[in-house]
Image (cartoon, rainbow, N blue to C red):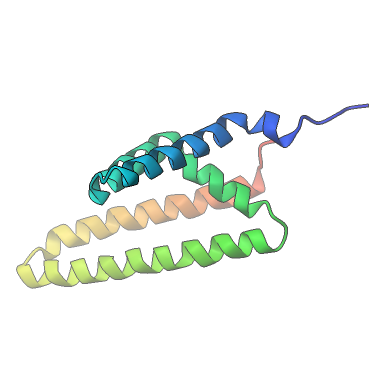
Length: 128
């Protein structure tokens, strides 16, 4: 028979990373390190290790409720980022940076189109 490895064996590095991150953050909070420093270091580590993306994928694997939780968490984040973009755009236009703003909006549009095309291609040709 073809036996699949256990969940712990497959994801032992990620689980170790999550435990290490939670422990490190807890210790830093206990010793009273500034919250901004903890947030900055956590952000930098999460960018390079993608530790929280793995946690999101793990939550998303739970049938029915997992994708719902991920959508409930991620959609407001995009709304907030979009709202901040509008506020910053309004301030920039008022200060006379309309040309620079138009250039940055074109770059943002290109980035969003790339994300959408990548999403579509990823679902058309999944890696097996």
